Every structure is written in structure tokens, then in C-alpha cells.
Image (tube, rainbow, N blue to C red):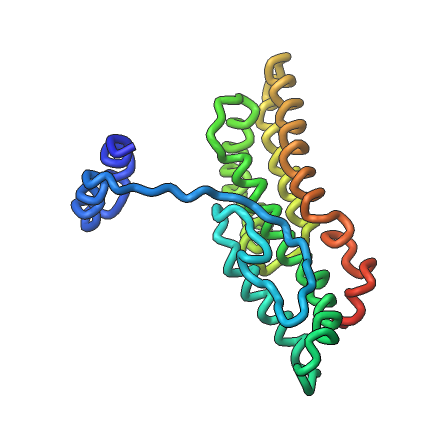
Length: 228
């Protein structure tokens, strides 16, 4: 690990920091932190309301944790605004059930994007996965909505879960098109089919874990109306 950090990583960081970085790696006191995802699972408790990573975690690849937390703060502020008293913990606990569903489109959009990108860019020698990684970069290079769309989702400015699904499969279809143009071959057709299969296998389990109804149809959940 130390050798890899010194020979591969060190040359990529600013020159002013390289000496300190190499010195730190030579000391050998390196720690790793496991990454994990945790879809929000409401557990109403009188006198407490979980927020941030204690309530909902996603892969840190996209840096979306703070975006979700700040969005939750704004929603909670709006829920607290009409209240005149916070004395009755049990009544508040029932009232705050309306917090969990309206937050879902923002949180699940960022969670799904983070989880999907992690799966796409995680180390793999699979040719279909390599094609999808390259298709992601080339898709963004197209500019216009192909660039602004994913970036707006990434930043939380467009909290629409359907947008994640559409852009994700647009990247997959774009990757297949790259393979088939100008001259498709049996091998390229096979890689293209596996690319679509991989895309489905990546995003649909994430959506299922997040909750299909809460993610795409929040108005169908009764608690939603108490927050309106």
C-alpha cells in the first residue's frame, strides 16, 4: 500500500504537498474506512428524530450526504414552523411521520446516483463494464442536456428519481450505439447486450432498496398529506 501511494498517488497531488504526503506514508500509520449504504428506514421514536448519516447513508463517491442533510433541515424547518408547542413528545412523534415521505425524492435521487456510479466505476476487468465507464465520460462530453441533466441531479437541483433512471439508461444506450457504429459484429452485439443487462442489474436493486412507491409516487403515501 505504501509503495502504491508513493509511486502512483504522490505524483498526482500538488507539488507543495508531496513531501508531507510521502513522509506520512513512510510512517506506515495508514487507516482504511469501509464504505456502506443504508436506505432510510423510519423508526419513529418519541423525543428523537434521526437525520444525516445516522438515518440514511449512501456511497461518498458523489459527496451527496451534506446535500441530503441540508434538504432534510429545510423540510424539518417547514414542518416545525406552524407548531406552537413542542411539549407533547408522542404527538410530535406522530406528526413527524410526515417528515419521512416528502424527503424521499431528494434523498433517493442522490442515493441512487451515488450507488449506481460506484457500481459502474468500481474496479472490474469486464469488457461491458469498461464500455459503460467510457460511455459515461463521452455522454457528459456531448454537452447540453446530456451534461446539465446529470450535473443538476448530482447537485440536488433536480431531485427527480425518474431523471436518474432515464439518464442512466441513456448512457447505457449511448454505450451500445458506440459499439454498433459503424460496423456491428457478433462480439460487439454481445457486449452491448451485457451492457444493458449490467445497467439493469445495477440500478433496479438500488431502486428496490430505496422503495419504489415512496421514491416515484410519494403522494400515494398517506403521511405525505400531513406535510402539505
